[in-house]
Image (tube, rainbow, N blue to C red; front, side):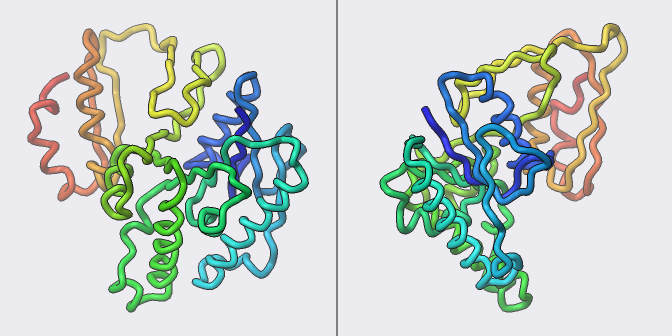
Length: 275
């Protein structure tokens, strides 16, 4: 299987979708079943195998402007078309845009019958409204981005989001079929001697098979866990409670940092009374 991921950011970025791409890239280098290629406008410190760069033209640098967003998506579409033309021998099975809005034109016009998948990484634009567009210039840009993002999601066979919370919200707000929206969490990086990954899980709604050797030897005292989030429901505090209480034989001290008004339903929850 040969996959092309079109990413605005890649390389030294260590958060969000760029972090996920770095994990996938490092993992797929050792995988013979999936040939992963990255097409990005990020500048690289040095050449990397299967990482191809495109220029970020001056006329699309200000993507915060409404017109800039449309040009930005068109620029990526034309760059991908040119890349596919000059690399006809690669014959990609699927092309994935790490930002759904960047895939607007490719989704609308198609890419020579290639399968297209899109990633939605947060709900910033799902919440855009006409009211906010009337009040601020940023609101108008967000509303247009929402239009591009929503329009782009109609034709592709698969939409990838980073959480179950975002999956439910995307399906509801964009009116998508549940079967086409998959969850792929951004994950985290461990040293190679502490983790075993199953690369076949790429782009599937299955958690990687992970084995971690604990670095802490004495577990007689509680394990301190710090949770920081302004919106506890969105951040998965409920899931964290369930996860900690499902681990038997250990005690945990959970500290929550965030607005009290968003935490009341959790402070009185039975799971919070357990160690």
